[in-house]
Image (cartoon, rainbow over all chains, first blue to last red; front, side):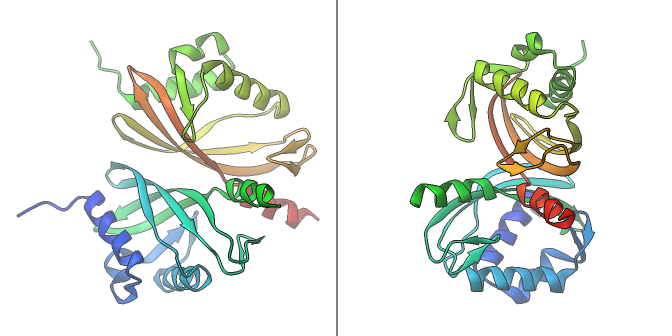
Length: 132
Length: 132
């Protein structure tokens, strides 16, 4: 039997997001998941992701760097997309933006139980400045 | 002889920053260090940190989460400080703000050779909003 570590589970989780395969999300995310130090829950987590895909139709999670030390996974995600309207309070309005998200996950029982995420908002602002 | 891994080196690097021990910085940071994908160099790196401490006299790096998989270290840093004037383009003007930085480091020859950092600017903006 092949051992499945956090990095394999994590890559399957990312494939689940990119496939918008919401019925499978609970295989990767714990019911009692916490986000940035606060209770959040699987239902909120799924709703947040569905809203992200509604607001950013070409959203795609691209793992650029993966650092694993069980029970933790740290990932640098890259995005290249065109949010339809506002994103993080910024007026994107269909323009193309690229940015990174540096995010930590804690796993329990092979599922994500805590997430600490930071999105590079300053990089997006710099791109909007440059387009003015 | 005790093996010194990246997490030990990293904690000594953080102690060097908190001690503002700039002559020692080159023990931890490579001459040719890159930052967010671009050439940066040790002299710029030191100047950036010195400027940070000038603009934020009570700056202190507090490691909250450390994930190590050689040659990478991922760290979630926490800050609780009072920037004197503007910080990340925001008018802080001596108010107390708390925020995180999620940052990845690549090590080569026991020194940091590449850094990918994201600071939680949105969290600071939310605190300024709440104080209005």
